[in-house]
Amino acid sequence: VMGLSFQDFLLGEAVFATVVFTLEVPMGWISDQWKRKHVLALGVFFDMLGFFCLLIGDNIWWALLAQGLIGVAISLISGTNVAMIYDSLLSGGREGEYRRNEGRRSAVAFYTVAGASLVSGVLYKIDAHLPVLLTIFFLLAAIVMACRMDEPERHRGRPERHPLADMVGTANYALRGHAEVGLIILFSAVLFCSTKLIMWSQQPYYTAIGLDESLFGVLMAAGF
Image 1 (cartoon, one colour):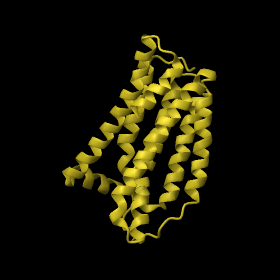
Image 2 (image 1 turned 30 degrees about the horizontal axis):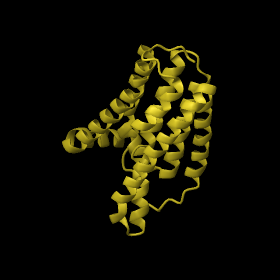
Image 3 (image 1 turned 135 degrees about the horizontal axis):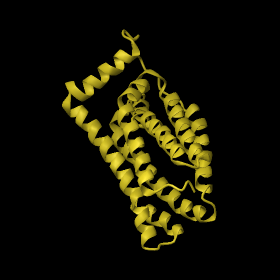
Image 4 (image 1 turned 90 degrees about the vertical axis):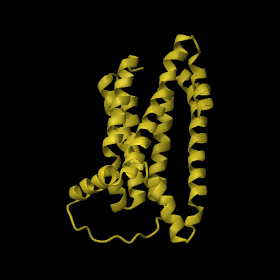
């Protein structure tokens, strides 16, 4: 619909990856300072803005803006959802159940994406805007649900430094002072972005071999 070349698409993915990589640590600091449910709601709001830009956009600049906003959303949500689960279990003395519950959350996420891929493939064939409209609708519902979550009380000390100094200190801790933490962050960011890129880069191949667009969703679902 936007008339982008595959090179344009890769440029958008590069913007997304850069934003996620740059903001992962600062957004993690924000998640530790604010109520986690508000951070989740804000992340979903940025995600919704990104998809709205895709809905109304008609050129490469709209696509780059959309990818940047979605990158901000991922940075806010990533880690916050995991911490929310752990905090909730910890408040009830059930932190030993964390790995099982986190595994269940991840599984549900993949199953949901697979199901959405099947539906979106059919909807795209009818109208290319329908999958994006449906996504925006569910994201709006997710904002409401995030705001209504019961969040366990956290005990935080008063900040002793400027927030930017804290962010720099956190980044320095993760990326320099503790190599294993920095490597986990870098590896996770690269793995996530490269996996996303590989999943989407299959589509030009499907087009080249003449597959009907409605089958793209089926193949994406199989991948997930």
